[in-house]
Length: 179
Ligand code: 5GP
Ligand code: MG
Ligand code: MG
Image (tube, rainbow, N blue to C red; front, side):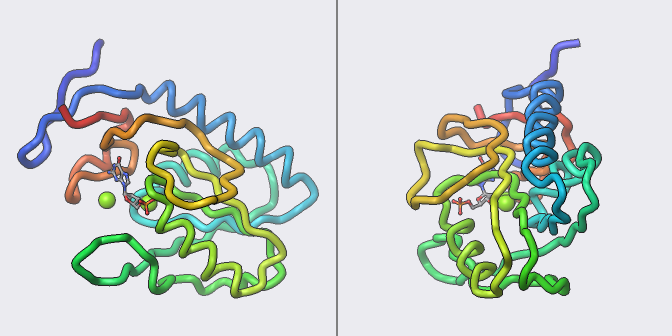
């Protein structure tokens, strides 16, 4: 059955990517990670809230001994919302000497990821890589080594599969865009 438009707050969202397309991208990322981390014991760090669904689906496909940690990031308050990360909240695991893989829902300007990478690298891990489900290459404002990218998309605002519009829309298995 074709997907229909959904209504969240004041906006309408039209189908953009199907659950099947997302599953294929997640499986491809998992296959790359299984190959690259063979013989290692990575610590996956999922950035809440947006990455909860991605992290759950990806980790089910990881066939390595691994750990998962969940963090939130606190942003600087200010008139210009740059999303610059001030603090990592909820990281209890020792990261020094570990192989870290950050799981992020989407990288847009890259402000958040740049700051998060700096905060994590300061804790002396053995390695840090990023696995982001979505990337908006046109919007990226920093040189970031994003080794694992699920799907590159144009500069469209998307919801679903963990991503929200003002709190709503995270529950949908498909992805929608504002119309
Ligand atoms: P940044 O600009 O720092 O790379 O992205 C910051 C955050 O903005 C992302 O982690 C995500 O929470 C949010 N964001 C960026 N693009 C989108 C989008 O298309 N849809 C939704 N729902 N959130 C987005
Ligand atoms: Mg995010
Ligand atoms: Mg959000």
